[in-house]
Image (cartoon, rainbow, N blue to C red; front, top):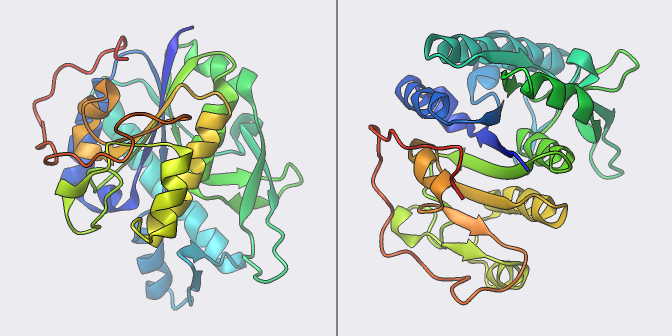
Length: 288
């Protein structure tokens, strides 16, 4: 099977012009088929404040009312997506920007939650594997904003980590998929403020133990839940780590690797976080 890299970039990277520029440099050097999924950083929140539109967050999730949906669609699918696409095009990457509504790429339904009404938040139903693989076969690098639709005319705000997992899961039927969650931290940490405390690999048993001991900070748990869902669905590898180390994440020499079964070092802490490699020129299609 041909390799496919599904890479999700964190919001704090998007918020930093220099960090985003470095990431685009590294992403454009990744050889082979690849898909990038991004969120919106803090720009949507700032725009809402400028327009005097109140924002509500519950456990880190945005309540998406009708006005907020308009804002996140403009910011995510508009400014941020096209900024990234243009930046990648300038670096020789034949990037195409998409939302779930384009070509019916990702169909979703409005989230139903008896306790909390998240508004126009969407949970993914199906990924259009044939359409996406057709675009990939044209050597296009796909860039997804986290907006989906219900095929009844309603746009929906959908968690970008979940979109990455669902895309990886759907396409693993056609490709050997490696899913990478890249953000500002060196990986899953035992101390959220210390990049030297990276957990090099986690399996389901060690994940449960780490949660029970409150070693993993709460904000990382949804990302790990998505990572394990991907592994259990046939994705070949999932790695969580620092965006500026993208080449090392692909090569398996940095970050936290999510595994399906136990390993001898599944809770081993790295000696130190790897330094940034801005001049990394070896991001290859044949990385394991």
